[in-house]
Image (cartoon, rainbow, N blue to C red; front, side, top):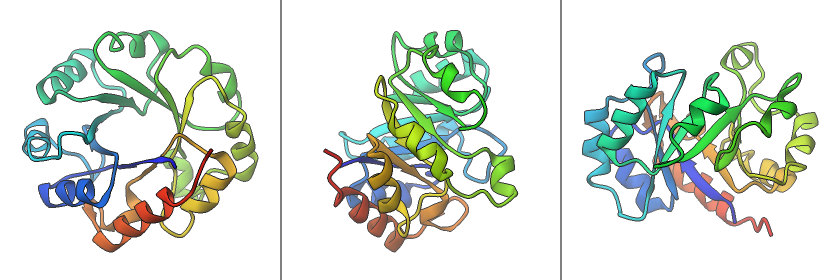
Length: 208
């Protein structure tokens, strides 16, 4: 069964609910240009109240390395997820202390860049500008390519929700799935029923 990450946690109610509902990991976004942005101090208040076995993931976009390191150390994060144009050397800088996930956006030439990143997992998502044009989920032609990647754990994102998560799991059999918008009542606020349904459907599928 794939692991489930609920991303864009902005308040303690959602954080505790998602952890109790069966999420394996919670994502805290420190990129200021999103409605799901959270400050380090607010994130600490949530993290300090989570179940001890929940994985805490910090999401950063083209951020200064020192700020990433300071936030990650302050919060005692388990995983750093880089969602911008971070280089292999940038990602390697953090691997001595943290697990690292690098996000890729399928398109021309993306496969050739994967092997340069010595990270814990690859995450595949849709570029924001493509989402605005109506491209809500990963295209079928990319799913087959992604499924063929064997050297790293694969995490699927990009428009996942309770209605389509099983479809994508069946076609890629990923290590994990990552959702934010697909389980929200409004930006930054989770819908409890959607969270429960997403986790239930994702974890009911055997990826072996």
